[in-house]
Image 1 (tube, rainbow, N blue to C red):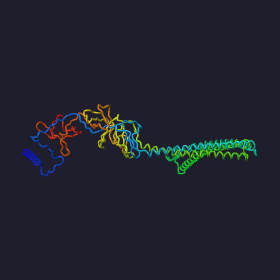
Image 2: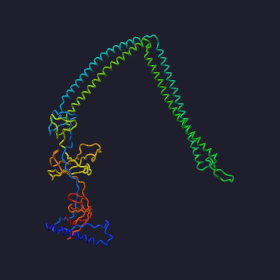
Image 3: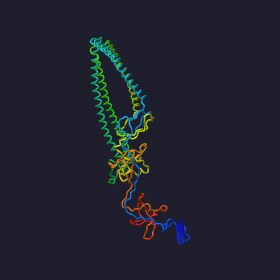
Image 4: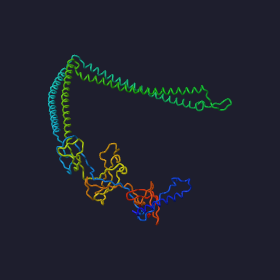
Amino acid sequence: MALTTQRSLRLISGVMCITLLIACSSGSPASTTPTPAELPTPTALPPDPGIERPTYTVQQGEITRALEVTARAMPVDQSRIAFKRDGRVDTVRVNTGDAVRTGDLIAELQQDEALDEVAAAEDAVAQAQRDLENAQVMRAREIRAAELDLTAAREALARLLPGGEADVVKVAVDAVDAAQEALDKTRIDTSLAKVNAEVGLETSAEALVDAQEAFSTASWNWDWVGRYGTDPVTPTIINEEGVEVPNRLNDRQRKTYERALVTAQRGLEAAERNVESARRALDDAREAEIEGIAEAEEKLATAQRTREKIGDGSGSREVREARLAIDRIQATLTELRSRTLNEQLKRIEEAGRNLERAQRKLEEGRLLAPQDGTVLALAIEPGMTVTAFEAVVEVADVRKLEFGATLGAEQMRQLAEGQPAEGRLLSRPDLAIPLVIRRLPPPYGSGSSGAIQDPDQTTRFEIQGEPDVAIEAGSTVVRVSIILERKEGVLWLPPEAIRQFERGRFVIVRDGDRDRRQPVKLGIETDGRVEILEGVVEGDIVVGE
């Protein structure tokens, strides 16, 4: 205790002496407040001779800054499955660790009500099918009767055709001839109108060319008048003295050229309108030709159909009545073919939809394996009440594993997918497993903006090659190291050799039997090494605290 007190007194006395010396050497009283550039540099206190301080040598070598996290082995392909409706578990067909294949039944809820609904829906489908079959039989009978009536009506019409009260055949033939003549005339007239319209368009186009040339000449002349003020036709004249001089235009003459330009422009616009009118006239002529011929052809076809229908006397009253009877029977036949089937088909469709709903409810009460794999987790047992869409079983392919870790946002900002890493088992730190970052959760990884929250927020590390140790999903834990920055051939010291005063960093360099304070500039800082950018050289001896 006495030795400590003596050391403290010696330290206080040394500080007071140093302060006194600084005050005495500060110069005139007017400069008592030093500028920032004149502030005294703190000097390390001389070491107590009784305390041995460690020393470190500035070395050149490699320095690496790495991020270390703990990760657990987990399958690459795994699925968490849940029932799609609430209920009570009836049976569980698997245990944890069992192998399953896609589609295997894992568990089922109590399905008595759902089974009853499926059975009732199946009965309804069967009944609707029977009703359809009965309706088909009945419809076939009625259709057969109507078909027989139609055959009889057609036979009655055929008997009436050989004789008639009026000779309508000649009328029908004359109508066909007249329609044919009208069609021929229409073709000639519309074709001639189209040719005339084409000639009119050509004439208008030629007139447009002439108008364009006239406008071009008038425009050139007016431009000449505007530029030079002389007559564009006779730009120079010989005056009374026999000298060639510019033929200057007066206002009246200039107006003449201006009116010529206006007249040419109007003529051009009129010519353009005439061309457009001629085009429309040609389009109308072509359309009239098409429509006129089509209308005449339709009239001819109607006359021909009438002639064919009349035959050798079908225009009589008896024939018309026979045809009316045929029309009525055909209408009845059409109604019979559509009325009953539509109603029964609708019932079958409705029963089918009810059956689909009942079957879907039944399937929602079953858990099926979504993939080949092993049951890793099982959170249900018979009698347990479950909630829809809450995962109760986890199935995964344990043959392909990777490591997963939950990282902080700041950690993930320093990483990238595809970045190499190294893992060491907590139980075997001597064994290194090469890894690669396969996946970073959104928004730090690829494929998502992060707007939709992914339930899996783990960072995944893919194992490279075959490791020399057995890895088990859920139980194997590794310490993953990801190199963030590496430099070779740099100067470094251990963190214990670096000192700090306020915001500055410095070291105590030992030169022979004296120590001096040396400011330093630092680079990469790790737990074991600190990069020295400026201030020391390789081989310097630094005194630690």
